[in-house]
Amino acid sequence: MKNVVYNDLFKITKQPYVDSYRYETEKYPKNPLTNKQTKLYQIKQFSKPVTCCIGIVDFVNSTNIVSRLSGDAFTQYYQIPLNELSKILRRFNSLVIKNTGDGFLFNFPFTLNLKDPKLLLQCIKCSMAMIEAQKDISKKLEEINLPQVDFRISMDFGEIFLVYVESQNDDLDMIGNVVNSCAKINSLAPNNGIIIGENLRNLLPDY
Image (cartoon, rainbow, N blue to C red; front, side, top):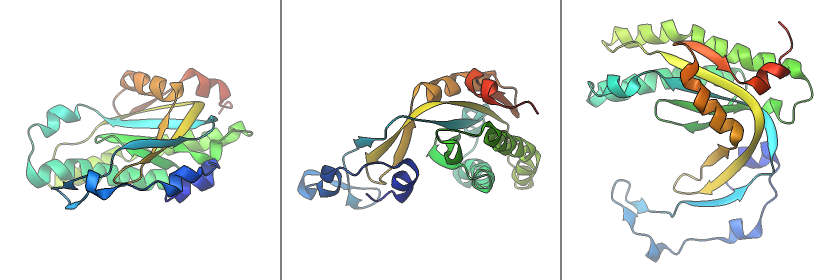
């Protein structure tokens, strides 16, 4: 399969039909936006269930803010914060699973089937680093006359399934009850703050 990260990190067993599957191009018209053949969105394979630490970063009130923006201002309001947060996630060896438009769904592969709870402190430090970057990110936005950005981060630990999706971009996705609960508690976090789920809190060593 094309997604090396998916295979290497999560030890997915290849299924012959995935590699042998080919789209019959005459059945799929060209996408007028890209002039490329449009692929059918298909979930091809799930990983075995694994446990790990996951997180969601979500911009606050972004829908209302960007409704007053257009053109480059609209795109830069998202591009600048997302790029800066992505750098921090990479620095802490986090894997961005999905760009939600105004945030990220991410996980920490080094916590897969966790044996040393102290590793979870790195996850917390990563989220704290993103929160600490909020002022600098907002300053960059204000320098080009854009509103500041505020965001919330939610984190938890639990069972997930990695999903290989055969689509135009051959995406990787992640599902599980912990993903759902992490999304639900995100709005409970203060602006530019962090909230963690009960599972993660119970695993965290005192610090």
